[in-house]
Length: 117
Image 1 (cartoon, one colour):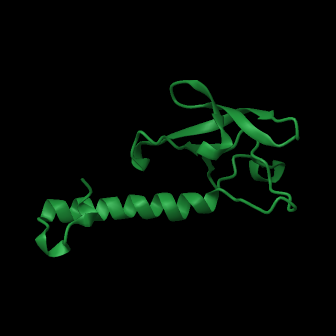
Image 2 (cartoon, helix red, strand yellow; image 1 turned 135 degrees about the horizontal axis):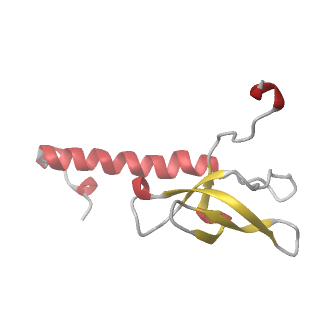
């Protein structure tokens, strides 16, 4: 049972810390991660996910702190040309996942010629 439903005055220190942890992960999952999944109107072009992008893989069976990092290895466009499924490489395996279960991280892994000099 979630400790978020218990009156804060009745919580022990451990329950209070557990409650704060639950609140943090709920906010992180619902606010920050959802902001990473850009959803635009159908008439506006959205940047597609690309090979080499770093993503967090959502797993509903695990808490968010245990979700894996992965790198996009291959994209699989649909008949309409939009990417809906990708092949990702995690630390342990190569998997196919729909892009709705992925959160692209705002990091640039590409280096330009001026940066390498």
